[in-house]
Image 1 (cartoon, rainbow, N blue to C red):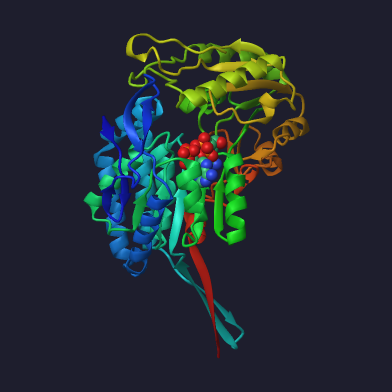
Image 2: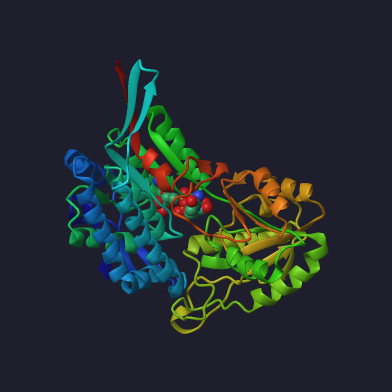
Length: 479
Ligand code: NDP
């Protein structure tokens, strides 16, 4: 059975204690590889390697950083099919979706490779009395912790800006989906990334992640994951005065006005509800529809949902693959049971899917649509992170805004209307870090990305990430 290794000091490294965790393929439910069950000793080795490399990487020219990061991007593109297959085997998402995500991972590296060449200092002249100039210096050694839903994409989304800003990185992918992070380590060796600049330590959150957050030489942590874990991290890191970026959960509203372009709204709402089995922090799981359109939308939406094929992630026509783990499968099924107990009316789905042959023990759930749930019930308030959405009617624009804001999360919202003034008004009034009007998941890597309220603190993307991964130093020269 394949053994994944850590990537420390430019080399593949076994976990020091020699322990491994089973890594199952969610499509079959069977263990297909072993993931290092690393601990604080491995984190220590990784931090030492990063500390040893930090001065040299910080002083590496922008051109050299650009070259090696571009090379990593090119190698990710070269290996798209291999990485996509690895991602699907590890995560359960359809292969066609993995191919897109691997492309986006290469784009992350390429985007921040170019950023190395564009960084500039600011200057402020104080009325003929002083010149201030502000330089941005790397922090040193930083930690990047990422979740299992978009494994390689989110991993690279953190690592690339951290490296571009001149830091050395110790990164921990989710132990649920370690394979593409491991393969990335191999590509970094091939690309000639100097030893110690990036270190990848696999293992459990409470062991490896916790050791990373607690390590006194790790000066900043960029974390993407659940809100509860994020709060725990903040409680650990805040007394150490560490810089923290927290990209957390979402329970996003998808607000549909009667004056929307219905065909476009339906097509995109299917994706925003069920792409990646609904395991995307940006999914629009609370669908609010203006009452005059409610029945029409419902009928048409359900027709489309019933056509979605839940099945083998390797088949091109599969729209909903496997749920990432037995544990998460149990959680989503428990959420469906809660929604029923709360009085929700199931319009379609609600059950697990039993496939045959080698997929018989995989974890599959039907796309599920509820209506008739109150605004304040658990199902409408808490993140499910699976293929489950709720439909709720509203009567006025004010009510739609109140419904959208009736939740403790504030990551993303979609608004569907052909009325330009309304689009602006509602966008301004909804408490979310990201608003999409007449679209969803339309990304430009230069824009700020992140959430309000329980969805996080700080922003990633573009210069926001470079600012996070650097210390500003102002130098004032009196004339
Ligand atoms: P978790 O919070 O469980 O885990 C995220 C990462 O943190 C994993 O690598 C995990 O390791 C690690 N971790 C767990 N405990 C600790 C700890 N004590 N100290 C340090 N690290 C720790 O999230 P999931 O992996 O379940 O991911 C799903 C969540 O991520 C959802 O809530 C989703 O909304 C959110 N998310 C947010 C995004 C955003 O951009 N805002 C994007 C994507 C997802 P391990 O896997 O071993 O437990």
